[in-house]
Length: 341
Image (cartoon, rainbow, N blue to C red; front, side, top):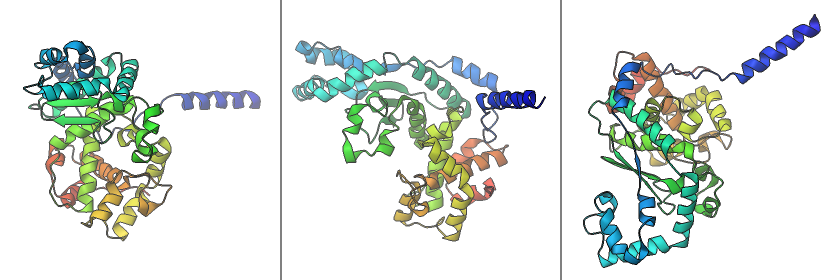
Protein backbone atom coordinates (compact mmCIF):
# COMPACT_ATOMS: atom_id res chain seq x y z
CA UNK A 1 0.00 0.00 0.00
CA UNK A 2 2.83 2.39 0.86
CA UNK A 3 4.47 1.70 -2.46
CA UNK A 4 1.20 2.31 -4.34
CA UNK A 5 0.60 5.51 -2.34
CA UNK A 6 4.07 6.84 -3.14
CA UNK A 7 3.61 6.07 -6.82
CA UNK A 8 0.26 7.88 -6.77
CA UNK A 9 1.81 10.96 -5.13
CA UNK A 10 4.59 11.03 -7.72
CA UNK A 11 2.04 10.90 -10.56
CA UNK A 12 -0.02 13.68 -8.97
CA UNK A 13 3.08 15.83 -8.48
CA UNK A 14 4.10 15.30 -12.10
CA UNK A 15 0.64 16.29 -13.31
CA UNK A 16 0.65 19.43 -11.18
CA UNK A 17 4.07 20.37 -12.46
CA UNK A 18 3.10 19.73 -16.07
CA UNK A 19 -0.11 21.75 -15.91
CA UNK A 20 0.51 25.42 -16.69
CA UNK A 21 -0.13 27.69 -13.76
CA UNK A 22 -2.99 30.08 -14.26
CA UNK A 23 -1.68 33.60 -14.72
CA UNK A 24 -2.69 36.00 -11.97
CA UNK A 25 -4.61 38.69 -13.83
CA UNK A 26 -6.36 40.18 -10.80
CA UNK A 27 -4.91 43.55 -11.80
CA UNK A 28 -6.56 43.42 -15.24
CA UNK A 29 -9.75 45.48 -15.53
CA UNK A 30 -12.83 43.54 -16.48
CA UNK A 31 -13.67 43.79 -20.16
CA UNK A 32 -16.81 42.94 -22.09
CA UNK A 33 -15.44 40.12 -24.22
CA UNK A 34 -18.25 40.23 -26.77
CA UNK A 35 -17.75 43.96 -27.26
CA UNK A 36 -14.01 43.42 -27.77
CA UNK A 37 -14.72 40.64 -30.27
CA UNK A 38 -17.06 42.88 -32.27
CA UNK A 39 -14.52 45.70 -32.34
CA UNK A 40 -11.72 43.34 -33.36
CA UNK A 41 -13.78 42.05 -36.29
CA UNK A 42 -13.66 45.54 -37.80
CA UNK A 43 -9.85 45.65 -37.70
CA UNK A 44 -7.53 44.01 -40.18
CA UNK A 45 -3.82 44.64 -39.80
CA UNK A 46 -1.36 44.13 -42.62
CA UNK A 47 2.34 44.68 -42.10
CA UNK A 48 3.42 46.46 -45.26
CA UNK A 49 6.86 45.16 -46.15
CA UNK A 50 8.81 48.22 -47.25
CA UNK A 51 11.99 46.16 -47.13
CA UNK A 52 10.61 43.64 -49.61
CA UNK A 53 9.25 46.33 -51.91
CA UNK A 54 12.66 48.02 -52.10
CA UNK A 55 14.59 44.87 -52.86
CA UNK A 56 12.08 43.98 -55.58
CA UNK A 57 12.97 47.12 -57.58
CA UNK A 58 14.96 46.63 -60.76
CA UNK A 59 18.30 48.25 -59.90
CA UNK A 60 18.76 49.37 -63.50
CA UNK A 61 15.68 51.58 -63.22
CA UNK A 62 15.88 52.56 -59.56
CA UNK A 63 14.50 56.09 -60.01
CA UNK A 64 11.42 54.80 -61.78
CA UNK A 65 10.98 52.05 -59.22
CA UNK A 66 11.09 54.48 -56.31
CA UNK A 67 8.55 56.69 -58.01
CA UNK A 68 6.29 53.66 -58.35
CA UNK A 69 6.48 53.06 -54.58
CA UNK A 70 5.89 56.68 -53.63
CA UNK A 71 2.15 56.48 -53.03
CA UNK A 72 2.22 53.32 -50.90
CA UNK A 73 5.38 54.24 -48.98
CA UNK A 74 5.17 58.02 -48.88
CA UNK A 75 6.08 57.98 -45.18
CA UNK A 76 9.60 56.85 -46.15
CA UNK A 77 10.03 58.28 -49.64
CA UNK A 78 8.44 61.73 -49.31
CA UNK A 79 7.37 63.89 -52.24
CA UNK A 80 10.45 63.53 -54.43
CA UNK A 81 11.84 60.01 -54.13
CA UNK A 82 13.61 60.01 -57.50
CA UNK A 83 15.95 62.98 -57.08
CA UNK A 84 19.59 62.18 -57.90
CA UNK A 85 20.59 62.34 -54.22
CA UNK A 86 17.77 60.05 -53.13
CA UNK A 87 18.49 57.56 -55.87
CA UNK A 88 22.19 57.56 -55.01
CA UNK A 89 21.51 57.00 -51.32
CA UNK A 90 19.03 54.22 -52.04
CA UNK A 91 21.47 52.53 -54.40
CA UNK A 92 24.13 52.60 -51.69
CA UNK A 93 21.63 51.19 -49.18
CA UNK A 94 20.53 48.32 -51.43
CA UNK A 95 24.14 47.52 -52.36
CA UNK A 96 25.47 47.54 -48.81
CA UNK A 97 26.70 44.01 -47.88
CA UNK A 98 25.39 44.27 -44.31
CA UNK A 99 21.95 45.45 -45.46
CA UNK A 100 21.79 42.62 -47.99
CA UNK A 101 22.77 40.12 -45.31
CA UNK A 102 20.18 41.49 -42.91
CA UNK A 103 17.45 41.38 -45.55
CA UNK A 104 18.30 37.80 -46.38
CA UNK A 105 17.97 36.83 -42.71
CA UNK A 106 14.75 38.84 -42.31
CA UNK A 107 13.25 36.93 -45.23
CA UNK A 108 14.29 33.69 -43.57
CA UNK A 109 12.86 34.54 -40.14
CA UNK A 110 9.81 36.43 -41.44
CA UNK A 111 8.64 34.79 -44.69
CA UNK A 112 5.26 36.11 -43.58
CA UNK A 113 4.04 38.12 -40.61
CA UNK A 114 0.69 36.47 -40.02
CA UNK A 115 1.22 35.81 -36.31
CA UNK A 116 2.38 39.38 -35.73
CA UNK A 117 -0.57 40.74 -37.71
CA UNK A 118 -2.94 38.61 -35.63
CA UNK A 119 -1.37 39.84 -32.39
CA UNK A 120 -1.56 43.46 -33.49
CA UNK A 121 -5.17 43.04 -34.59
CA UNK A 122 -6.16 41.67 -31.19
CA UNK A 123 -4.15 44.36 -29.39
CA UNK A 124 -5.70 47.14 -31.47
CA UNK A 125 -9.13 45.67 -30.74
CA UNK A 126 -8.48 46.17 -27.02
CA UNK A 127 -7.03 49.61 -27.72
CA UNK A 128 -10.28 50.66 -29.42
CA UNK A 129 -12.23 49.14 -26.53
CA UNK A 130 -10.40 51.27 -23.98
CA UNK A 131 -10.04 54.28 -26.29
CA UNK A 132 -12.87 54.30 -28.88
CA UNK A 133 -11.42 57.35 -30.67
CA UNK A 134 -7.98 55.77 -31.08
CA UNK A 135 -6.63 55.70 -34.63
CA UNK A 136 -5.29 52.33 -35.77
CA UNK A 137 -1.86 52.98 -37.30
CA UNK A 138 -0.58 51.81 -40.66
CA UNK A 139 2.11 49.23 -39.93
CA UNK A 140 5.34 48.83 -41.87
CA UNK A 141 8.17 46.33 -41.72
CA UNK A 142 11.66 47.55 -42.60
CA UNK A 143 15.33 46.62 -42.53
CA UNK A 144 16.69 49.45 -40.41
CA UNK A 145 20.38 48.66 -40.70
CA UNK A 146 20.63 47.63 -37.02
CA UNK A 147 19.05 50.81 -35.68
CA UNK A 148 19.09 49.41 -32.16
CA UNK A 149 18.26 52.74 -30.49
CA UNK A 150 14.74 52.67 -31.97
CA UNK A 151 13.71 49.23 -33.20
CA UNK A 152 10.09 50.45 -33.08
CA UNK A 153 9.04 53.86 -34.39
CA UNK A 154 5.57 55.24 -33.72
CA UNK A 155 4.37 58.55 -35.14
CA UNK A 156 0.68 59.39 -34.89
CA UNK A 157 -0.79 57.06 -37.52
CA UNK A 158 2.31 55.07 -38.46
CA UNK A 159 3.98 52.16 -36.68
CA UNK A 160 7.34 50.98 -38.05
CA UNK A 161 8.92 47.67 -37.02
CA UNK A 162 12.63 47.20 -37.65
CA UNK A 163 12.44 43.49 -38.39
CA UNK A 164 16.22 43.23 -38.53
CA UNK A 165 16.26 44.03 -34.82
CA UNK A 166 14.29 40.89 -33.97
CA UNK A 167 16.23 38.06 -35.61
CA UNK A 168 16.97 36.11 -32.43
CA UNK A 169 19.49 36.77 -29.67
CA UNK A 170 22.05 34.41 -31.20
CA UNK A 171 22.16 36.11 -34.58
CA UNK A 172 25.83 36.65 -35.36
CA UNK A 173 25.66 40.32 -36.35
CA UNK A 174 24.27 41.28 -32.95
CA UNK A 175 27.30 39.87 -31.19
CA UNK A 176 29.56 41.77 -33.57
CA UNK A 177 28.13 45.04 -32.26
CA UNK A 178 30.48 44.50 -29.32
CA UNK A 179 30.50 46.95 -26.44
CA UNK A 180 28.02 49.25 -28.20
CA UNK A 181 25.14 46.88 -27.48
CA UNK A 182 25.65 44.71 -24.38
CA UNK A 183 24.36 41.17 -24.08
CA UNK A 184 21.52 42.10 -21.71
CA UNK A 185 20.17 44.32 -24.51
CA UNK A 186 20.57 42.11 -27.56
CA UNK A 187 19.08 39.12 -25.75
CA UNK A 188 15.79 40.99 -26.36
CA UNK A 189 16.29 41.13 -30.11
CA UNK A 190 13.87 38.24 -30.66
CA UNK A 191 10.44 37.89 -32.19
CA UNK A 192 8.53 37.52 -28.92
CA UNK A 193 9.45 41.08 -27.94
CA UNK A 194 7.99 42.76 -31.03
CA UNK A 195 4.39 43.15 -29.88
CA UNK A 196 5.20 44.37 -26.34
CA UNK A 197 7.75 46.80 -27.78
CA UNK A 198 5.13 48.14 -30.20
CA UNK A 199 2.60 48.88 -27.48
CA UNK A 200 5.17 50.24 -25.04
CA UNK A 201 6.17 52.70 -27.74
CA UNK A 202 2.55 53.58 -28.51
CA UNK A 203 1.93 54.15 -24.81
CA UNK A 204 3.75 57.49 -24.97
CA UNK A 205 0.70 58.91 -26.76
CA UNK A 206 -1.61 57.90 -23.90
CA UNK A 207 0.57 58.51 -20.84
CA UNK A 208 0.73 62.08 -19.51
CA UNK A 209 3.94 63.30 -17.87
CA UNK A 210 5.60 66.47 -16.64
CA UNK A 211 8.87 67.90 -17.90
CA UNK A 212 10.37 67.63 -14.43
CA UNK A 213 9.48 64.56 -12.42
CA UNK A 214 10.36 62.94 -9.14
CA UNK A 215 11.83 59.43 -9.10
CA UNK A 216 8.37 58.13 -8.17
CA UNK A 217 6.79 59.80 -11.18
CA UNK A 218 9.48 58.49 -13.52
CA UNK A 219 8.96 55.03 -12.07
CA UNK A 220 5.25 55.40 -12.74
CA UNK A 221 5.76 56.59 -16.31
CA UNK A 222 7.70 53.40 -17.04
CA UNK A 223 5.19 51.38 -15.06
CA UNK A 224 2.32 52.88 -17.05
CA UNK A 225 4.03 51.96 -20.32
CA UNK A 226 4.34 48.37 -19.15
CA UNK A 227 0.75 48.41 -17.91
CA UNK A 228 -0.51 49.83 -21.19
CA UNK A 229 1.24 47.08 -23.14
CA UNK A 230 -0.12 44.39 -20.85
CA UNK A 231 -3.68 45.69 -21.19
CA UNK A 232 -3.38 45.31 -24.96
CA UNK A 233 -1.51 41.99 -24.67
CA UNK A 234 -3.06 40.42 -21.55
CA UNK A 235 -1.34 37.05 -21.96
CA UNK A 236 2.19 38.43 -22.14
CA UNK A 237 4.46 37.02 -19.40
CA UNK A 238 6.14 39.56 -17.15
CA UNK A 239 9.56 38.36 -18.27
CA UNK A 240 8.79 39.35 -21.88
CA UNK A 241 7.01 42.54 -20.85
CA UNK A 242 9.99 43.70 -18.80
CA UNK A 243 12.67 42.09 -20.95
CA UNK A 244 14.24 40.13 -18.09
CA UNK A 245 15.27 36.50 -17.74
CA UNK A 246 13.06 34.34 -15.53
CA UNK A 247 15.85 34.24 -12.97
CA UNK A 248 15.84 38.02 -12.75
CA UNK A 249 12.03 38.06 -12.57
CA UNK A 250 12.20 35.65 -9.65
CA UNK A 251 14.56 38.05 -7.88
CA UNK A 252 12.14 40.93 -8.41
CA UNK A 253 9.17 38.97 -7.12
CA UNK A 254 11.10 37.72 -4.10
CA UNK A 255 12.47 41.17 -3.22
CA UNK A 256 9.58 43.50 -3.99
CA UNK A 257 9.05 44.38 -0.32
CA UNK A 258 12.79 44.91 0.21
CA UNK A 259 13.07 47.23 -2.82
CA UNK A 260 10.10 49.30 -1.68
CA UNK A 261 11.40 49.51 1.87
CA UNK A 262 14.80 50.65 0.65
CA UNK A 263 13.30 53.41 -1.51
CA UNK A 264 11.34 54.73 1.46
CA UNK A 265 14.19 54.35 3.98
CA UNK A 266 16.65 56.20 1.74
CA UNK A 267 14.05 58.85 0.83
CA UNK A 268 14.55 58.24 -2.90
CA UNK A 269 10.93 58.37 -4.10
CA UNK A 270 10.74 62.16 -4.26
CA UNK A 271 14.26 62.80 -5.46
CA UNK A 272 14.65 64.78 -8.68
CA UNK A 273 18.31 63.86 -8.99
CA UNK A 274 18.79 62.62 -12.56
CA UNK A 275 21.45 60.14 -11.44
CA UNK A 276 19.09 58.58 -8.89
CA UNK A 277 16.32 58.35 -11.46
CA UNK A 278 18.61 56.82 -14.08
CA UNK A 279 19.77 54.16 -11.61
CA UNK A 280 16.18 53.24 -10.79
CA UNK A 281 14.56 53.18 -14.22
CA UNK A 282 17.40 53.17 -16.76
CA UNK A 283 18.15 50.10 -18.85
CA UNK A 284 21.05 48.30 -17.17
CA UNK A 285 22.20 44.78 -16.26
CA UNK A 286 21.34 45.47 -12.60
CA UNK A 287 20.16 48.27 -10.32
CA UNK A 288 23.21 49.66 -8.47
CA UNK A 289 21.33 50.11 -5.17
CA UNK A 290 20.57 46.39 -4.98
CA UNK A 291 23.75 44.72 -6.20
CA UNK A 292 24.66 42.62 -9.22
CA UNK A 293 22.21 39.88 -8.31
CA UNK A 294 19.37 42.34 -9.01
CA UNK A 295 17.90 43.35 -12.33
CA UNK A 296 17.95 46.69 -14.08
CA UNK A 297 14.90 48.95 -13.97
CA UNK A 298 13.88 47.77 -10.51
CA UNK A 299 12.14 51.13 -10.05
CA UNK A 300 10.13 50.61 -13.25
CA UNK A 301 9.03 47.23 -11.91
CA UNK A 302 7.78 48.87 -8.71
CA UNK A 303 6.02 51.46 -10.88
CA UNK A 304 4.21 48.63 -12.65
CA UNK A 305 3.15 47.09 -9.32
CA UNK A 306 1.72 50.43 -8.19
CA UNK A 307 -0.23 50.68 -11.47
CA UNK A 308 -1.55 47.16 -10.98
CA UNK A 309 -2.60 47.99 -7.43
CA UNK A 310 -4.34 51.15 -8.68
CA UNK A 311 -6.38 49.16 -11.20
CA UNK A 312 -7.21 46.42 -8.70
CA UNK A 313 -8.29 48.86 -5.98
CA UNK A 314 -10.19 51.26 -8.25
CA UNK A 315 -12.50 48.96 -10.23
CA UNK A 316 -14.99 51.75 -10.92
CA UNK A 317 -12.42 54.02 -12.58
CA UNK A 318 -11.42 53.88 -16.22
CA UNK A 319 -7.78 53.02 -16.86
CA UNK A 320 -7.39 56.28 -18.78
CA UNK A 321 -7.60 58.08 -15.42
CA UNK A 322 -4.45 56.30 -14.34
CA UNK A 323 -2.62 57.09 -17.56
CA UNK A 324 -3.52 60.78 -17.61
CA UNK A 325 -2.77 61.46 -13.92
CA UNK A 326 0.62 63.18 -13.63
CA UNK A 327 0.94 63.44 -9.86
CA UNK A 328 2.83 60.44 -8.53
CA UNK A 329 1.65 60.90 -4.95
CA UNK A 330 -1.99 60.93 -6.06
CA UNK A 331 -1.54 57.64 -7.92
CA UNK A 332 0.33 56.07 -5.01
CA UNK A 333 -2.35 57.11 -2.53
CA UNK A 334 -5.19 55.88 -4.71
CA UNK A 335 -3.40 52.61 -5.41
CA UNK A 336 -3.07 51.68 -1.73
CA UNK A 337 0.06 49.84 -2.80
CA UNK A 338 1.59 47.72 -0.05
CA UNK A 339 3.90 44.89 -1.06
CA UNK A 340 3.69 41.71 0.96
CA UNK A 341 6.75 40.73 2.94
